[in-house]
Length: 481
Figure 1 (spheres, one colour):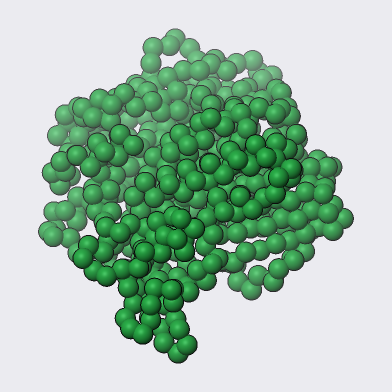
Figure 2 (cartoon, rainbow, N blue to C red):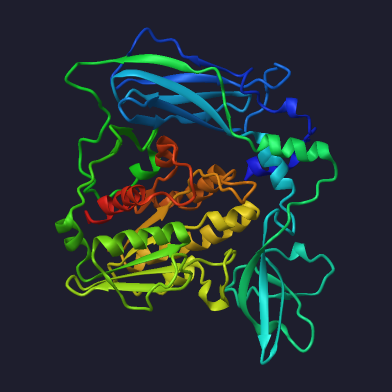
């Protein structure tokens, strides 16, 4: 968490010319006479501010993209931050022909620093409300994962009721008491009132995505009969999942509008699914983006609901479905608070509680994911939930060696009603990697970041065809065991 501590120490001047400049910053192709199909090559990015001065700090979130729109080709590079205003992009020449390499400043360091400093008791856009009811009396108060939000105000410590994860609600007025907490909901706040116009202008400017105008065009040479390379040549049928965590450049690339994986070949067909799912359960735990995984398999496997049928697309309650022919059951359940929808308090069960419920000796499949709802809070809230989930996964794999677990990573998106979007996505990604670092060979990482940025479909909920790619990236490994 050193990066977050450094952000809190930043002195923000609110001068927009101190932000990285898309016109002054430079991009260089590192020395190379020719680039051939299959080569790994690098570029250097040097950031300058609006005064044309070289920046001397790191921490900016960059995206380096390689494109050929004619061939429907695209990939992203791996970005190395040298913490002095310069960055190295590592790319693989995965197809032949002309390519254009562009660099995007998704979030300058100042945007992250400023938002983190303002991440106080009340988030800029949304607040979770604790709903108290007893007979005909009802009221609601603010709810937070930190007691610091209440200062000297009376509050209810609901940590025990929240399965041991920190949660506090404002104390309700008589005759209601703390144990009358039964539901939660969220409300949309007004934008914060800035103390002066300069701060508001600076923050709005800092949150804008910038494409550095300096770009690179190169020709990738290769044999006429070999238009692309870098695709996997071995099957994903291995028991060691380490490569899902340690891919150096990118997890895949688009060519002729089809996603090609670089680590291993996925073979997912009806026969594979039936063999994989027969006499088995799949637990999908998380938010609405993991609920998309449930919807994908529900349709592909012609399943029927065991619990009530969905009456709305944004379903927020535990759901279970089955395929009787395969004797296969699948469930989806929402994760713990913070959750920004309305629900019964008991419905917000933590990931670790669900995982602990899986019996010993099972061969269950598990997919877990938290991210979007946590971005309104300090990353330490996210870390505590991920840490508890990792502890439970560790115990599950000990008591049930045949179980298979996948964790869906973070992804980049822009969301119209939010201010921070996915600014801390890579910070949250690093937390996942740290907490699961001793389980790389046993847990599958579902890489979403590369796919989303390579596609240019930068939305919170990916389209159905992209969800299928992500589901198959888990099944390709999970169904090989």
